[in-house]
Image (tube, rainbow, N blue to C red):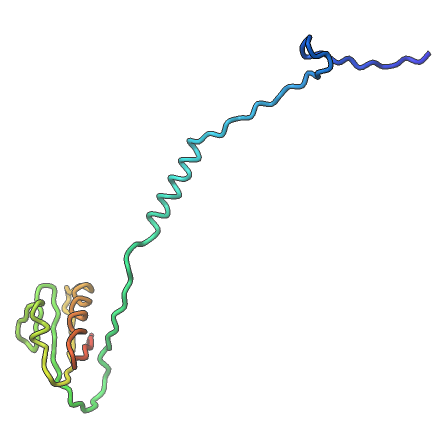
Length: 140
């Protein structure tokens, strides 16, 4: 006689005799704390690496060597940390537009003092840019 195998199925409960005893996996909940930490670090990184300042350009010519004759009036401007000298005379920054204004074409040779900052040079160039018939040149 052949023996038949009988598979024993354990009933899960007495109400459903055909239910298998299969363990259900519980889904682990995702921890939001670590996700918030990563988002905060990314936010901090992008805040520190991005720049919000606006870049601008100011065109100016540098003085070149040469002895070409010109009909322009040459004005010498010495920019120092605490004062501005125009042709050897002390001038206030606020009065630069009136001091340099003439009807004749002129070239302003700007010499930088040892402690002059680049911001002071940019401020001076922006004032001189508004004067008609004036061409500023920065020298060594």
